[in-house]
Length: 218
Image (cartoon, rainbow, N blue to C red; front, side, top):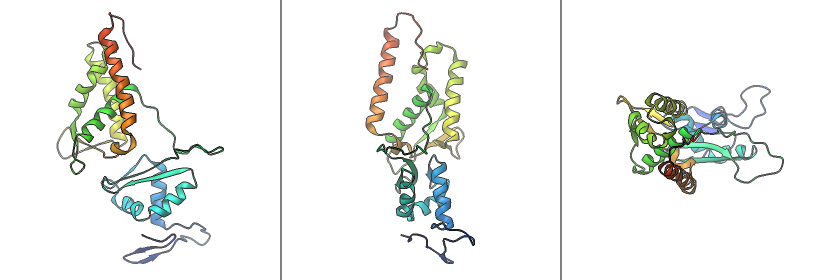
């Protein structure tokens, strides 16, 4: 574990003062890791191995810095994922730095399906899915579009592109196959997933019982 302000490297100790008037206490590598945590949404050992290793090796120092901003550091070495989140405890006068991004109904459906596929896979194995199979899994929740495949595809594609942009799914060497990021094991609790899944099940039941009226989910 590197000590605060000094980080041992193969070329010797790394000092924390980066220029003459620098008063910071973190090394350059620690600062880069800290800034990446603040940018979000998460750090993956697959995409940013050096930064992830810095976070893992300096978690106490970085966690202390994040606590000063009312943020908590989450590191899962086995999953190779690290991220910062707002404190679970509300503190009067604190400011929310990590803004929550509301999900559309379709984005939520896609996320829940991806998480389901992830937890069905051994933690030691990669969870891989195809875009088309995920699209097919969303169709029962798209009753508002009737049989309009173009409209269904458009809604799904917007959600799917968001998953790719945020690295929730990543391309593989096989065409049209995507690896699900293990971060989904961490950001949703089992209770949260169960609550949303129950709500979606109720929506499907309502659609089955509907006598012809259109039900809009978004």
